[in-house]
Length: 200
Length: 200
Image (cartoon, rainbow over all chains, first blue to last red; front, side, top):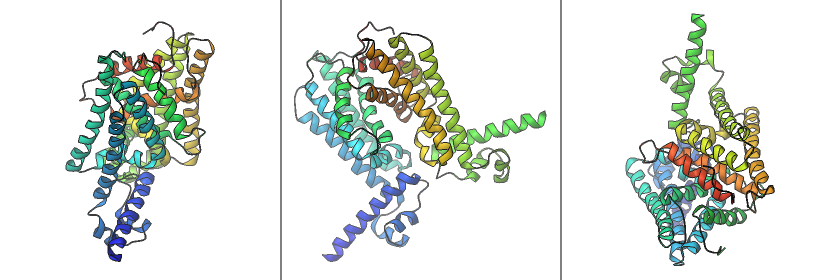
């Protein structure tokens, strides 16, 4: 039992060290020695817990994408009103990208470093997220609640706004994740041409 | 004269090779040997033309930022109407980030790799760009042409939308830079709460 706890702790320490290293020097600029060293282990010990540097990136990327997708699914499941769904989705998605900006940067900027097999799995999650947002905008437009000539491109722009928050968000800046999330939800209603009263 | 042309050609070849290498493997994952090799030169020859790998990144970053800033300045100088200025600025800025997406990614994602002195110079250009867009939204709001409760945050969102196009834009996708630029200009008018007729 103690051994199992040690192994879980070691795995977690290595994942945390990998996040810090990838964020600071990029995937290709990081060695397994850097990661093992930051986790207080030998390079050989790293391979007991993770098959490779790419496997670490994949685990970080998978967890990050699963979490972002779950936020979107939860927002859509919580209501049948497209405006309410959009406000909740954008608010939670933007807040997530501000709070978890270090992981979100790795998740979004290091896709090209994944193996072909892992990349296909992550791309499938990204396509599900794109489709959820695009379908939400389509549904709102079809019901007359939204007015937009380009639902698919508007969906891309909505996700884009949230993802880019991870690039520029700075804890030392004057805006809280909550304040950005609230204003961006308002911007999202404007972008889709919401014609109801704001539910925010 | 022939020697001078050769030197200019060598500098340009090295800059192009650096762009490709930084885009593929990140700044920290790229060696000066990689860059020199891709330009058909020895590592020693690289140092005849560029002081360091960081100097190459700085030159790419400086040119990219100067060009993006010039686009914004030109759009604002071309009209005195805030709607016209916004439409032109967003359209040109978005088109630029789609067409030059490889350079734009390096310019926006490798800021942390610049020396402190170079970073300060680039940050000054970024602050001028932020201020131009924020002031444009403020001016439109003050004159009653735009309605937005958060001009500064809306300005950040407008630049964010354009910059993130560089991340996801794919020549093989179905959307042309022109189509994205046109739709995003329309989204920008909605985001600022433009109450005039669309000038696009």
